[in-house]
Length: 58
Image 1 (cartoon, rainbow, N blue to C red):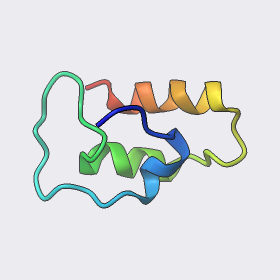
Image 2 (image 1 turned 60 degrees about the vertical axis):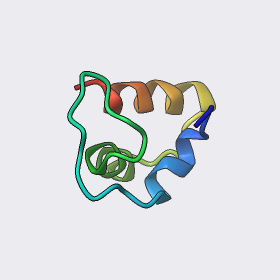
Image 3 (image 1 turned 180 degrees about the vertical axis):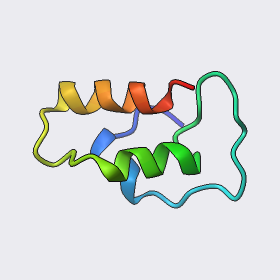
Image 4 (image 1 turned 135 degrees about the vertical axis):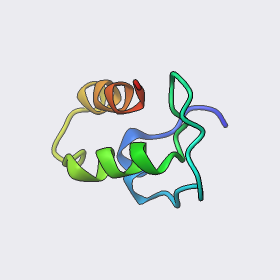
């Protein structure tokens, strides 16, 4: 899938069911929900990338 902009992850369409692996995929419903709860627009790109990494950690 390549690199994705962390600010755009919250607006992506989630998958139907989560794979529940150790590192969740970008389209996982849990990751999208976690990213939508935080405001990535006011963050710097480095902080948003760290937030995405934390959201994907299971």
